[in-house]
Length: 113
Image (cartoon, rainbow, N blue to C red; front, side, top):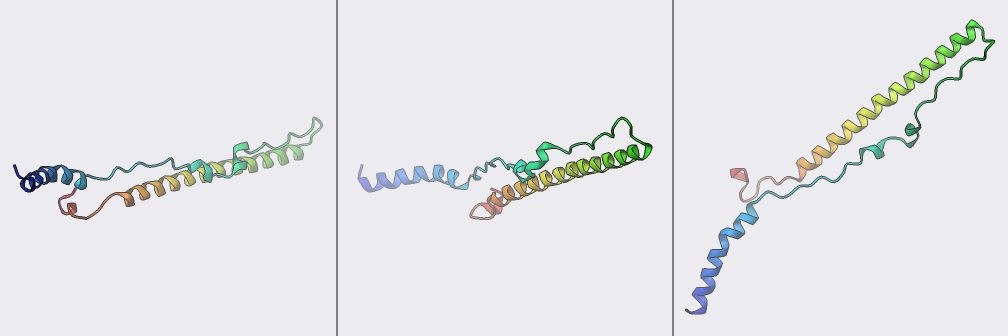
């Protein structure tokens, strides 16, 4: 068999295989978002409680302690809400990046590939 028709035959046989590779969706792998790095380092230590009044404390001292303890609790709860919001925003950013990385359009885009 002559070389020219043989080469044409080989190319024609390889065309469907190469089309399958070109038309396939790209593989998108998300790296770890590392959302925890967005939280301040001092939040790992937590919020310390207020100092207890001494044994000979007056009612006013106990009221001041309760007020201080409530303020510390508000700070701790605020950190929790902030941390949840930071992680949710980080996850949304990651989902948006993956959506942008997916192929749209192109040669086979009109049929949904």
